[in-house]
Length: 370
Image (cartoon, rainbow, N blue to C red; front, side, top):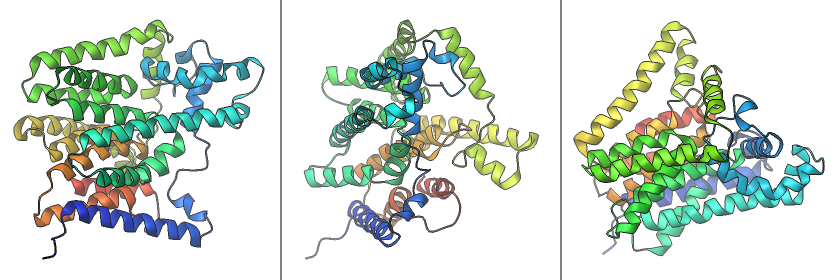
């Protein structure tokens, strides 16, 4: 008898088909179609802008309002900036360094390290005995819009915030005590890169693992404050953070950009956006405590990472890779699970078929997934 197609296989087939169509469209357009699936040809601008601050600015948080990463993130980026220090000392400008052979090598190492960690994360998080399925899922993720088209194109550190959060959630229920402790450290590191993954600490509280939750808070505090000994000062960071909040930049992929695009930017829509963001955060925490930890509550919690900050771009959708894996782990053979498979595959691999911003389309697909 033929084995019935599962939602898991359904997701793989549709995703592979979407990626094939995308590549065919790239071939037929002689590459110009790439403009529809990336922000721009920016030479990994997020990566190099922060590397530039490390190379040329003794006080990182005194440069501009976009120096917004917590100090642990800059401490990590020093691994890629300092090997290029001799070029800055020799008078090379940032654009020269970014186009040099060694500059390109640092970018390659940056992405290779992420791909290696993502492979480990999928291996641990994806509860299947099939090595082939894990490798196929890794390939789909790497070539998805959120990773390949947006996060890679920017070189944004959100990649590492996501993969450390994935490792933390994957190991939190390990029978090995050391690995459970490592899970707490990984989540603290993720929050040390982007701050808002700290909300995932509520998972431990919802599961009444209070001692672990307390240690997670301690690890988080250490991850945030200790790096200030090596990266600028807390006072400068606080000043820059306040400047960032006053920028008035609204991404089309955020709640703010979506609402302003429909109703305009005014006093009332500002209040509406704040109410929606508060509702997302409170409902995510509420359902986590009511329904427990499952792929839907994880997905709602991921919304706090993807759409609530005004200047939140589509590369933050990499966090939903974790929701996808949770869904694949739990998917049964209900008809609705096949619908979710289509939505997840569309979110990550559907070629752009509408005019306008790619990110705006992804927002509504994400909403359907939950």
